[in-house]
Length: 206
Image (cartoon, rainbow, N blue to C red; front, side, top):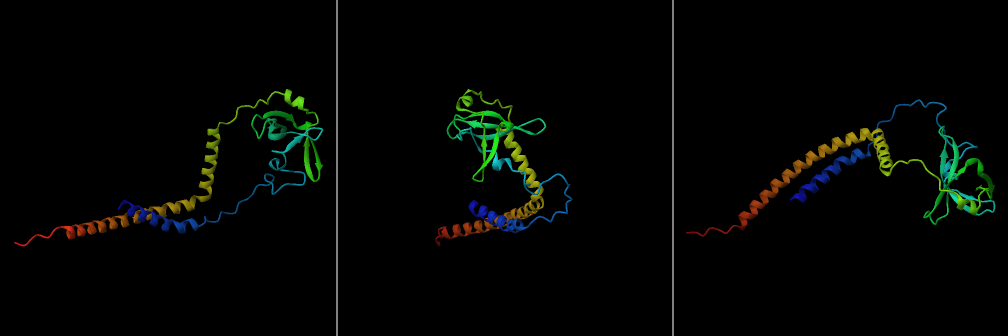
């Protein structure tokens, strides 16, 4: 009986909420975008660090790969001062990070691709360097909390009206499911009582 009631309630909720999910939020009012703040795309003298810098291999003067760029080193005024170079190891295991000044890197083109080199680096120099000392980083819990807050804010901003309608529809569906469940219980009780009467032995006549 509980399975019947649960199934009925779930079906009612899905049927009532389905049209709401297809609805879209009301069109936003026209927004005045401030000038001198945003880019529409990359300019001819620009590139995205994640596309051409982060993860790019760095070679020495002989053209041998000595590592790949893992991160950027920023100044207190938010300017790029250097890169973190991951060296050694296999597939990231046992890898050592070293800090490289941005001005020490050389950029060139070969077969239409950007080549990043560090002429001052040799195998012995890289081996002799101490691992780069990173500052305090956010813990995994702090980063997860930031992600959850951002997701929550986006949800509130973009889906607020739809969620409110969905809540109203779901509330109505629950009430309807309760009514259907009550009716099902009553019919079930009547069926059980009727079955009991049929199953009861007939009283012998005197």
